[in-house]
Length: 530
Image 1 (cartoon, rainbow, N blue to C red):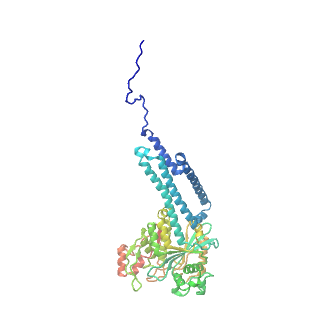
Image 2: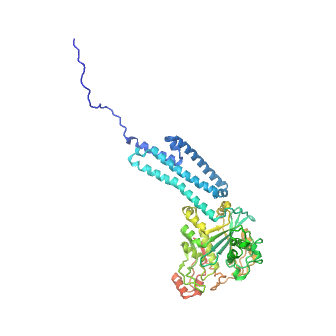
Image 3: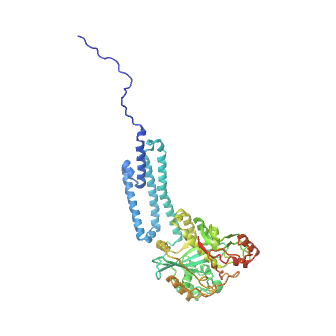
């Protein structure tokens, strides 16, 4: 009987070989990981917190989702509020306390959204992505953070700039303004307090009358050399001038601001700007209107606003000199430059000279150019320009504009301004072309009141019968002859006269040929916004 011997061989040290090995290389799941990464980023962009609920810290995600839904609800309510009562929404947003809260909310949301994107990047784990996406996904996260959190931070900055500008320009505690006969009437003055001038003189005086419901507006321009201005019935200036501002050439209306500020401010106790208040009373009494508020534009800071806008576009009707230095006899050295007729984009300094220059013309031409510049600025205040240059505009505005308009009604008046764009703007000037050249010296107030009523009611008044004549050298109270062709450059008086160029005009100025210059510059008041 035999027995087989047991297998006593030693086990082999070689590893066992699998016949069907299963491999899980990283590249096999790369497409899935990439899709997941982009999906999580999209979720964090449109529904912050949802990525955390699906694949991360669920507690953080749920808190973030609640905040997201609350913000969505607030945005929806804001849109509804805007559609139902736009004016009240603007009033609310311009309230100092509300705007401060809005700034804080924007900053908190910006920081929170940035943190959500960083946490989403942690969930994605870029090291597990395909080599080509390891750098792309973090870069995309940075871009999204700049767009979202950066955009919210910029919005907070804009709100703060606007808040500061509103606080500097408008009255924080002023009484509410009520419409009179269904209208709001505002006095807009272009004041000039240059180093070579005594006090501030409002050389541009315009009353804007706005329908309190429709926003339809009209403007009435009062020449700076207007005499015998009447004061409203309750004006304390009636104690000084019971028959109106009637002391002759020393009582043209633009001297009133400085005179009241320096001599009669005690008649206006508690009034922040007695000069402006007196100007409101004079304009109201002259026109037969009740003026509720004013805006005073400082021409000294005018150029800063123009530069903030990137220049102002106009269509100039004639050549305008940039005056040389003043001489001892009250004249000027030859011009330092010229602004040509035609389409122009003026920088701040050029626009300031275009609005101020009055050599060889008079105040009526200058007033026309000032109104043109104002209209051109408003035309360029489109949403894109305002948003992209808001801080510079707000900073310039806070140095440029003073007003007694109460902050709590700012939204209502902005709403009226938006409505006004849907109507044509009718105008009246208490001088040429609506009245004769001597009307501002010897005004007929009954005629003025009737013309103002006709303007507001939309009636067409008959043209003035007083003939107009060309201005003479040195007469500041007579207007230049108006060109019948708007926005056309002046033509030489004869075929033998050289073409009108800045070199030709400069030579006339050097030679002292004032008569020729008066003729060639007679239409430089013609201007339209570009």
